[in-house]
View 1 (cartoon, rainbow, N blue to C red):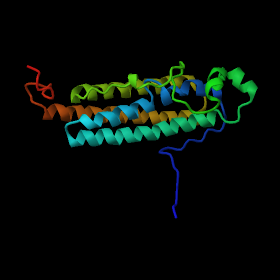
View 2 (tube, helix red, strand yellow):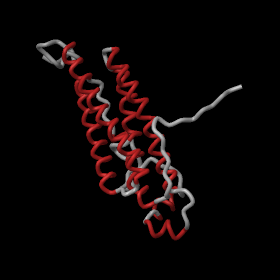
View 3 (cartoon, one colour):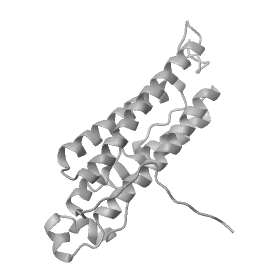
View 4 (cartoon, one colour):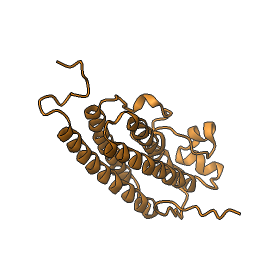
Amino acid sequence: MFVYEKKLQYPVRIKNPNPALAKFIVSQYGGADGELGASMRYLSQRFSMPYPELKGLLTDIGTEELGHLEMVGSILHQLTREMSDNEIKKSGFDTYFVDHTAGVYPTAASGFPWSAAAIGVKGDVIADLNEDMAAEQKARVTYDNILRLSDDPDVNDVIKYLREREIVHYQRFGEGLRLALDKLDEKNVYAMNPSFP
């Protein structure tokens, strides 16, 4: 027998459906700076990281981002449950609804579906860690923008938690970059590329 207990990293309990709010929160699910992109970026970059500490950092944060993806998906699902036809039209959720009903689909608020083209995986320790720090700041700004537009305390509670985690990840990637620079040849921070003069 199996015992299965499903628990999010942080609880998501949205009391009031609000498809208008879901229209822009979807960007943190499938937008260029959202949680799906973050998880794929970090879990892909880890393979070419030269140091075990950095492989571990990318694995840990990439896995946590998958948990955040699930939290944002839960927010979207709860915001779009039991909508009437009138609510769908009035909220402007109708264009999304036509294509996806109330399914949680990885897209940006602008309507562009998620694409791996939005993530950076270069295979260079310096380039990738700088990309990661920038990605965390872009995600934080997106959460800031959501907080400016949302008046739902249940949603804002979860968004504030996710925003905090972006800041922590930024700090961890900064520590990782310092570690990498300490380990690289002092005369050439691009020592990972042996053909560099």
